[in-house]
Length: 300
Image (cartoon, rainbow, N blue to C red):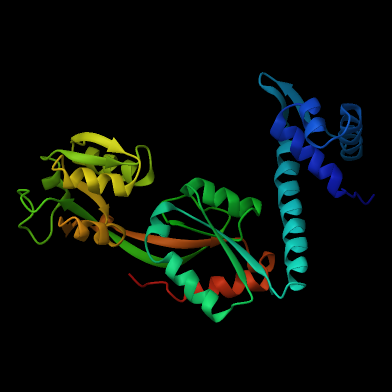
């Protein structure tokens, strides 16, 4: 027997899973709770398996429900993109692309690369959002973003990952710092000095902690801050050195008359990747932008 899922039922199911309550989902969708319950019950009977159970935190999807939730988000996301792209033709826009990227990618050349694409394809609308690495991957998987740009240390399983740009970690410090006269610096040498941590718990922070542990050492952080800009200001105040992405930090480091030296370690080179679903899921505009960004693969 052929099974069909209408968009309203899918939207209601997603709402129940997100709200963990049929009553709250019904209020969110401006329906009565009995109507929502009836629709989901009909789907469960049609499939012959329960989709929802009541857990400690409210209603939760079963294993089958988790599968339906993932697929429902993809279908609804595809429908939203279809309506958005078709409606834009009336205003002369020949497609739109949503890009989600990490702070590191946005701090470097990604905005310039996208600007170059827009100059060549003025009828394509590109939106660019900032997210954490895991969130970028999740948005691409669920169809909330067409393309994502992340450090390849993020788990991108289930998606296509194409090389994009690279950057190099460096050591930022005042000119008077004992290490400032060196042209490059080994990681072990920095561990004897007070440092400033950036984005506690982030990918870079975890990488540095892991590399210190491999040497049997710990990081000597005076403080930790949430942004690259704050770290550079603290270094300028003479409160410690900081390990930062060389390309992203270099302009601010130069403006504050600080010194930045390359970190001489093989793991200090970071590769960014463009993540997407398979090409058949991408619009023509998204494929054009993907090709444009991929041409920059291998560039520093």
